[in-house]
Length: 77
Image (cartoon, rainbow, N blue to C red; front, side):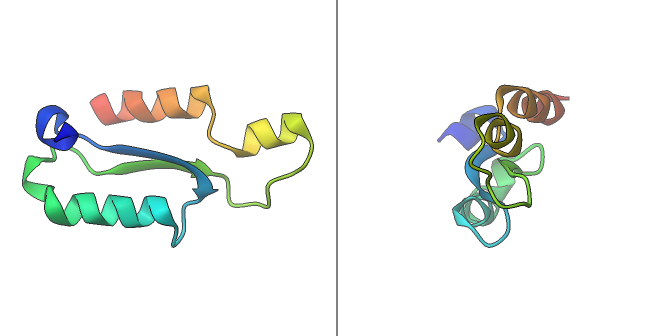
């Protein structure tokens, strides 16, 4: 219903974007609600690297406020 209301979809997940849950969600939304979308489905995922144990490095690799905000701005542009 959110896609029908906003005509947009942003999927945020801590996994790598390739062949994960976020990819499947994006595919399902594209298949089932394509006629409602005004923009492509966007995903914000962890960077394509192993997640480090160091907190500062982990915060950089995982989706953060800045990357999510940039994706929302791009989605609404």
